[in-house]
Length: 155
Image 1 (cartoon, one colour):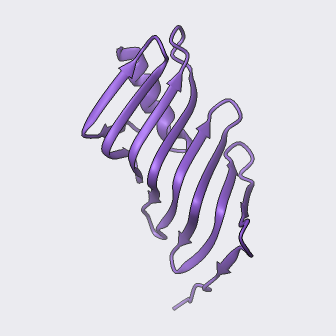
Image 2 (cartoon, rainbow, N blue to C red; image 1 turned 180 degrees about the vertical axis):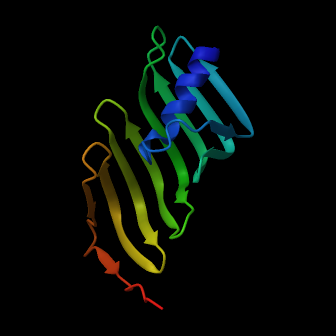
C-alpha cells in the first residue's frame, strides 16, 4: 500500500513538470479508495494535489497502475480540472478531463480547454502536450482555436 501511494504521488504531477520532481507531493481529498487487485487508486471530493509551486484540483482523480510493480499506467481526472503554476508569471490550464500517460509522456486535456499565462489566453476543446519534447497542440472541433496574446511591458 505504501509503495502504491508513493508511486501515485510521484506520478501525479509529472504531467505538469519534470523540474520539480524532487519536491514532495501532497494530496488531499474527501476520500481515497484503493482497489489493489484492479490496480486503481481513486481520490474523490475536492481533490488537491500540490508539488512545489504547482497545484492540480479536480472533483475526482483515478490512478491506474500495475498491481505487481506499482508502475503507473494512466492518471485521469474527471470534472473541472485546473492545473496552476505560481511564480513571476502565473500559468493556469483548465478543462473538464485530463489524462496523463507516463509511458508516452503525453498529457491530454479536453473539454473547454483554457490556457492562461499572465493576461494572455489560448482556448480550444483539446490540448495534447508532450512533456518529453515540450511540443503542444491545441485544437477545437467546433470552430477556430482562439488566442489572445498581451505583450509584456517593460518599465
